[in-house]
Length: 86
Image (cartoon, rainbow, N blue to C red; front, top):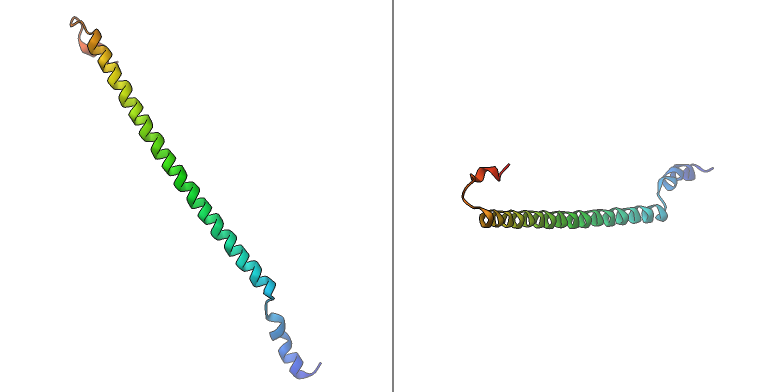
């Protein structure tokens, strides 16, 4: 092997193929897609959790108000109110 070829052999061999760079670009795209999908799912989950919490709070408040109204309606004045709140 001539010396000029020997000197350039490793330089040529160390270069990556185009296919390698295409694979890297594809991996980056997959990672970016996965990350955006993960962020979207997390955002949707947070929105649903907030909605569910508000709904539960609202339901508890309505139930409490109804219970108070029933107690007021049925209260005859003879028994102390603290018996109702156990």
